[in-house]
Amino acid sequence: MSPEADTPGNRAGAVPSLRFGYGTNGLADHRLDDALALLADLGYDGVGLTLDHMHLDPLAPDLAARTRRVAHRLDTLGLGVTVETGARYVLDPCRKHGPSLLDPDPADRARRTDLLLRAVRVAADLGAHAVHCFSGTVPQGTDTDSAWKRLSEALTPVLDAAASAGVPLAVEPEPGHLLATLSDFHHLRGALGDPEALGLTLDIGHCQCLEPLSPADCVRAAAPWLRHVQIEDMRRGVHEHLPFGDGEIDFPPVLAALAATGYRGLTVVELPRHSHAGPHFAAHSLPFLRQAERTAATAAPAPAPALQQTAPPHGAPSTTPEGSSR
Image 1 (cartoon, rainbow, N blue to C red):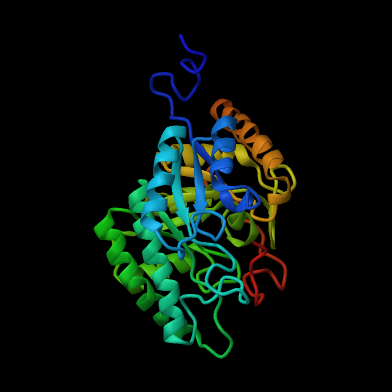
Image 2: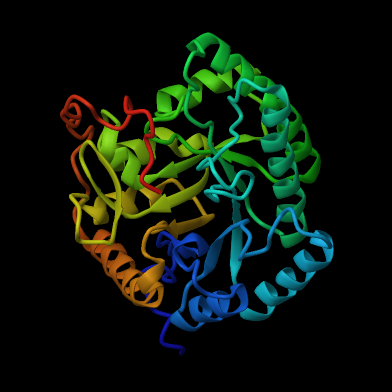
């Protein structure tokens, strides 16, 4: 019998083990081939691949050929993949995450839509389980109704492409953005007519940062729409992605809730400001998560429903202009 054969996730009737990945935006100082090999050697199940100039540049020539090569590399290493689109300066060298889907200039909004269409094609060619995106912050001088209208219109062709490709689009609630919370995600769903291709990226740290529900309850509430998960530590009211143990999140209940949903996509460690020590944090994150998963498997079920979290302090990232420490 192999060492893995009698783990809790493999015993008959047990909840399957979660599949953990690491984001390439936390390995930005590495060549993509080196980053993928590192993650495979550490035992990760997959990777959150941010399309950026150093890692599968979505705007450089021969994208299809380069994507095929990456697909072969992923297959050789046995890594699953989610395609992420949060590169800071991939479209504009001066504007972080700009232009966005909310930009006042229709041509600029179209550039972001085009990036997402490219991401859908890449995801289909890689066999990715989802394409991640976010709304962007509301530009100065734009009213909220206009911002929601722009977002819906800009995402419509992307959702059509995602439906045709069979790859869900997983929108992430991002502190400080127009779409900042689970409630905002449901607002978008309603505005678009609840398209099947529209799913959710749930960032566990963001739940701790500003959602009224606990992170574990956020997982349960999000379960029907969950297509991608990002995970890191965080503190209440402070949008700063932290290594595990440096924040306030109790992870075993979160992982227990996630496993109970039946979610089988990747749960990707999201430490975009830690590339300077990427191998260190990648090496330490997976054992932490596996230990939390083992603790969750042996712990008594938590009482439900969990208490709501206290509100973030005044000036929380849901109301600050930049709204992102990525």
